[in-house]
Length: 103
Image: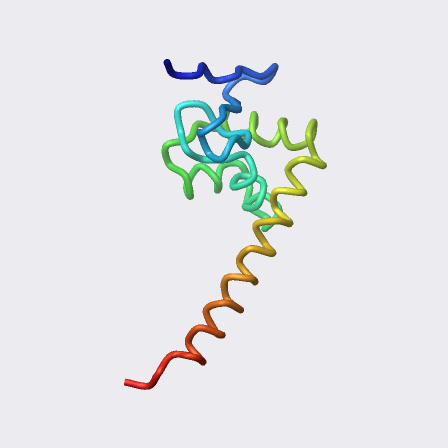
């Protein structure tokens, strides 16, 4: 039996185990709140975020930003973990390529 998505106090935002890693996401999408926040922190306006994610409505983008401001520590922790993951991946990739025999 499928687990129902947990509807939060904000419209358009859900958290569900097994969906987007259990992280807050925009309903009926696989776009996480932290994806929207990352773009916002890069200086993108809500309208520009809708261009990057054309399936999102302006209301969904604003809901994601509202969720962020209500749960700043949670989203900042996610962003920091993902930032570190990218760096760890690049280091592991470089180490692998250095060990790989030349062709």
